[in-house]
Amino acid sequence: MEEPTYDASRPMPDINIIYQYKLANCPGKSIVGLRVEFPPKGSTPPHRHGGSSVSAYVFSGTLLNKMNNDPMKVIKAGETWFEAPGCHHRISDNASKTEPATLIATLVLDTDVLERDGMGALIQIDEEYR
Image (tube, rainbow, N blue to C red; front, top):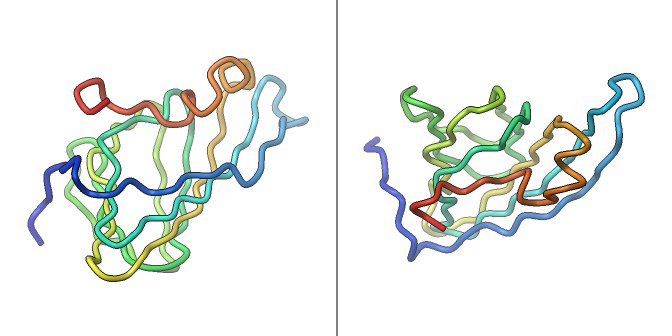
């Protein structure tokens, strides 16, 4: 499958915080859960998650995913991936033009950064796509 380039005319996913807790066993760290719902043809601009460690689980549908300079992967419902702090998420697209896709992402990050920057700490879209 050919790697898509980001197209700003495609719809963005809905992103909602579904949980947020301070980690008692990791002072200064918080865990945040995001539900990311991609409409058909949905796409997210290239982005990073700051200093977060991120794990993602595809709940439904199929996503196209490219990290850093690694090859693009097709990730189906029931599959997962991990993003290390500073990872560049270059492709994050719904693979379908007709069906939605949903993922659940869990991010672990510094509590002070989360409290200061809120959603801006969780998703940092590349400057040229803002």
